[in-house]
Length: 348
Image (cartoon, rainbow, N blue to C red; front, side):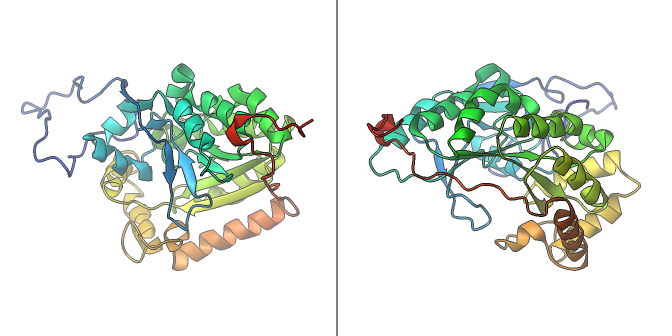
């Protein structure tokens, strides 16, 4: 299915009954349920800041304007969270998007509280804040306006060159030392990208975004996430060189981890589009996590362990030393926060 990562909807483990279509006569035409169009579901949460207790994550708080993601990445760990809403982690995750319409207003209220202590907020920790829905709803832009109003530091990560739309706000934040931007670049092979991350920006456009952000004085890093042995691990040196040449000052990686139903979705996709190497890739993925497609151990789960993990780690480390020597992401300025969003008499 063009434009879709998952090719079906696995059953929701929280629901006893489900609705589906069975082709008894082998009819090979997709129904509306099987090839769904994007639908919007609107939510007005009382709180929009999520507190993280994972040592894997650098910042304690994150904010997600959307749940579900049109990018459709087959490996996305966030797919499982969609089942809590009564949807499937497969096609539903890519086509039934929950929009938090009041996200900026609620963030404003939470930063206004006397109990809030200035610290960086991650945008987004679960689904991409610049996914295609952002073109229509502009919620991420409104969140950045609130961050600028309060002078609160923000870190954002995206696979979408749409981030360049907000160059004006990001430039203002950067001048104050309040923003870090990370582009997630998984592969430079556009065929692989179009199948594995079907509605993301091309690698060329993401690298161009790194260049444009750098020219605007905005500190940019790159995450090669995830690295999948047998699919993209050989690209590590060339990809890091490309993003370093574009001006990135930092680079990091995670290995693929197929938690929950993601293992089923990813393997089905892999066997459909890369049948010649499916067994090899799945065996190497399991080797990263002690024989299983996922590891729940904090920290170890993101880097893996064993022979293949060591190969990936060493290749990345050597490439990082070669292309990112003496580069560093600048620290945040934590001294500009405006209590109540008001300007101090001593600001000039």
